[in-house]
Image 1 (tube, rainbow, N blue to C red):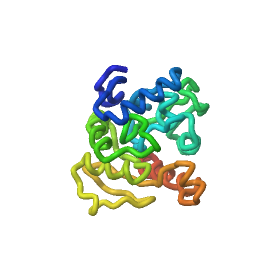
Image 2: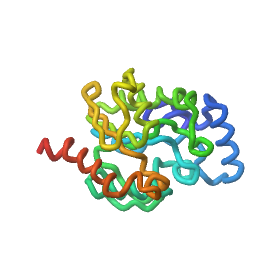
Image 3: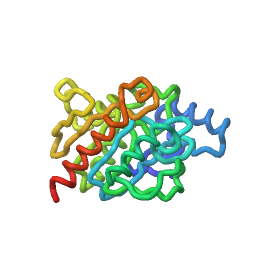
Length: 218
């Protein structure tokens, strides 16, 4: 979509980050049937919860066009969201699987796939206005879940906060401008294979958010 709407993100032909634009062009040439563009946010515009990841995976969201869709990280994330009532339907690793998010939006700190899944500081900064705009657009927002340190730091910088005053830590919760910002290790295959993040650890974070957002208010 050729739009600067913060929900959808940069236009498909965004050239702001030349390295990422060149990588997109390489992927388009090699895999012309893939999405190969800045990946828009996915979910409910009336969301109370925003989940922020790092960036699209090359064979995941960069291929499918939906955040965390088509790779291992999505398998863990969407299974957990379904288990804790933040999604409904069936996750089928495809944007046409019929899955719907409930009071939740998923996006990324960087909307384009970076080489080796490692965006530079300048690329993260260039994409931050879209994250800022998305947060401002979500009028019902109460909580943000940051998947990994980069997502956490980008969110904190949106609010103009010192990182030293709000350090990233798995399971941490930070009160920020009327919102609660939760941290989790990223649900990547690397983190689960190394034992840094277990399914139980990840589910515990989602369970806490569910309790804080919905169960405590009922």
